[in-house]
Amino acid sequence: RAHRSYALRQQQETAAQLLRVASRLAPGLLRIYFAPLLRTLLTLLRETSPPSAAELLLTLAELISVTSAAELDRHVATLLELCVDALQRAGSSPRARAALTAFEQLLACARPAALGSSPYERYPHLLHTLLGLVGAESAEIAEGFAVSAVRVLGMLGALEPLRYRTAVTRARE
Image (cartoon, rainbow, N blue to C red; front, side, top):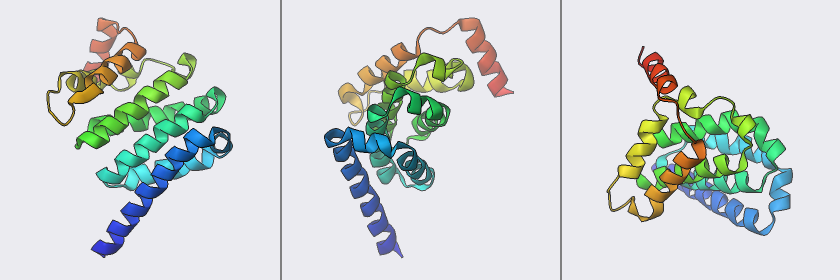
């Protein structure tokens, strides 16, 4: 049973790496199959162990980068929820780095109107999570990680303190 689980994880990681290569070499091909690939990645990300999840999140980031804005806008709410959840649950540094990469790519490629209300309001703990990543001094996390977190904070934009406090208070209740 353990061998089968390990073999499945290895297959998932290999498939994810191949998709990342394909996104660089044949972005048009992946653009055509964006919706089914996204459904598959979302299913796998909801049930996968952290090592595979990191590879799958990096694949998601690559897939986001090659799709059209219109197609991405249809799935932005689901992707945003997934990225924020992955960031908040990331126990291992590879998974956290991959989640941050996917989140950054989503914010860079999605149209602002598609994001709707501020992600800070929908996910009150997001600011705390991102600031924690900026302040992380772990040797595993250091290289470029804090810079990516600052870039994400910049992409999310300013935050009105009163609205944020209200959102945090609602989340605590």
